[in-house]
Length: 403
Image (cartoon, rainbow, N blue to C red):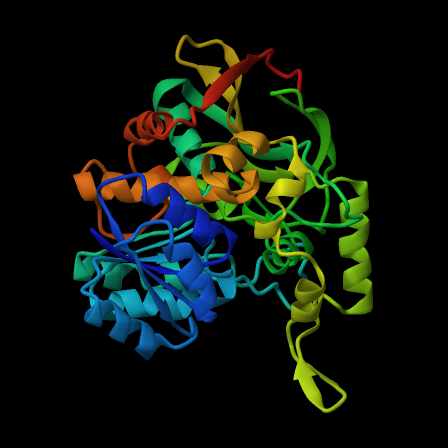
């Protein structure tokens, strides 16, 4: 399999490092900054590095053709989804991403009604992908991605009826020497945290709430302990109900009071905006300025300590007819990911899942056409292969209605 990997930031670089240990794929690594692509390509002698503007659909199509690629792997910010998604369809290759096309809140009632939802632009052309016989596997990072695989696994093997699929993300990571240092792209973090969160309920469909709504304390495993989690806009809520039956689907993130306060301040000052403003004769995006002022998450690994946990909390009726509550989760220790791969825990945990998915696609264990989420495909091959990669998942039985 020949893969065009677009984006050589922290996640893209980790993807290259993980894939280099597997025999199924060769990479052409593209980035706007050629030096970043070249650094990522050092993971394997046969990898190639090229310069590319991810906004340029025609240039992407040309690269896919020139390098005879079978698949386009999007590891860039979600604002660059659609040019890559459209280029892959036009070029007749499969496509994967870890974040879907951007949402646009309802202009009149943003905290009650959905406007354009995450992924709507991609699902709008699902028929074209089916007719072409090509697969667009969307949202295949860790969240979304592994969390969706967990939902499929719970529905198939653990539950006869599901009340709630609740993705819950928490960590005890610290970064030495910084008062504020996000461990993932601040551009993406601002986008998902300040947009109206989406909830799905069987009787209501999709609806929105204000940012950081419905705080709850969720107890995480691996020594993390209780963390306050709040509603955040995320793809799982838009993906899971399409393929998995449940009464309710939510996504809550353990951000912490200080992190929420910083995001709220950025919003009050207008520093979360993406439209350029005039500064000394130059036109700059406030959010891009914020991102430029913060440390690169990919470079924080040697200053980080602790673990990160991503998982899906499921409540309902078990196969035996009794109430059941389970948390299926995946933990990565930053000390392990740095020692083993040289990547910090959050970006490594995101990057491993599309590598696993691509290996399954290459082997034929995962197959399909159209625009599909991870929960549309069988969970067992994925979870088995993830364990084979040396990063096992786990499940924790909980007393029903105790969380």
